[in-house]
Image (tube, rainbow, N blue to C red; front, side, top):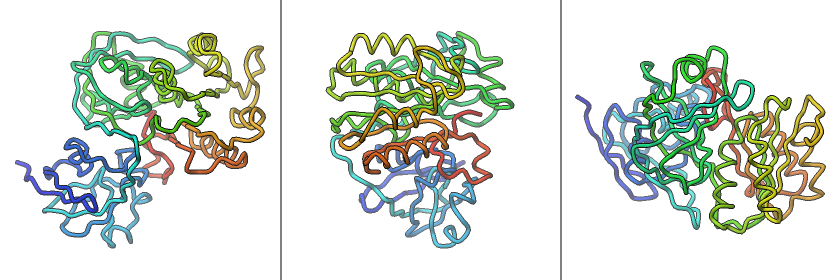
Length: 353
C-alpha cells in the first residue's frame, strides 16, 4: 500500500498530501496549488524545482531535461518525481493578474463523433460525465486503454462548452495512441478516461492587445478554443489567425473559420497558408513568411503560437524581428514521445504518438 507524505511548497507556504506512487505535480494540481508545467511527461523541464528537504524518486525524467549534475544538486521534475519522504520544494512561481487556475479532475467520456477532417487527421467529440472548467487553450491527458500510458491533446472547444470536448489528432505511423488506437480500434460509443485541465498555454483574457495566432497542423486546436472563446464571449480582442500546412489536403476547418470571418469582419481575420501548393484563395508560402509580409510591425500585439518546433521557432524569430517582445509571445510546441530520449527540450506537449 502506498505511503502518503506531506509536500511543502515554497514560496507559496502551502502544503499538500502526496502518495508515494503519485507525482508531486499531480498532487499539487489536484489540491488547488498551480505550479508551472507543460508536458507532464518529464521532457520539457518547465516544472523543474529545487528540493530543499526530503527525498524524491526521479523515475523516467529525461536525462536531457534533468541532467545528472542537476539531480545531484537537488533539482527535480515534479511531473515525474514521486516522494520517498516528506518533501519541501522551491518552485519558480509567477503570479499572473487576471488568471484563474482550475484544479485537475478525472473524467469519463463517451465518444459521440469521429471524423477524418484532413489527411491523417481525425476529430473526436467526447461527452464528459461532468463539466470541466478550463482556460481556453489548455489540454487533457487521455489514458490509452490497456497500455498504462497517457497522451496529451489540446481541447479545441471553448470553455463555454464544458461538457463536450473536441480533440484534433494527427496520426503518427507506429504511434501507440494514434495508429494503435485512435486510428484503429476506437469507435463511436466507446468510453475513454481522461484528466484535466493542464498547461500554461492559454488565452490571457486581461491582455486586450490584438492577437496574432499562428498554428501548424493540429496546433490549430488550442487556437480554435481561444478564438471561439473570444468571439462567443464578446471579448474585445482583435484576432488574426494563420494556419499553415503543406497542401490543401492537410488543412481543415477552412469553411468554419471563413464563416467566422464573415460574421466577425471587424474582429477576426483568417489566413490559411500552403507551403507546397499554390491554390486560389490560400496564401502561398511558409506561414511565418506570410505573417512577416502582412505585418510591417508587430509592436503592440500579442502572439499565440502552436505547432511543430521548427514552425514555432521560426515564428518567434519573425515576430521578434517585427518588434514583438518575448513577454508578449506565448508558445507551445508539439513533439512525440521519442523526444524524451533525444533531447527535444523545447516540447511542452507529447502530442502525436
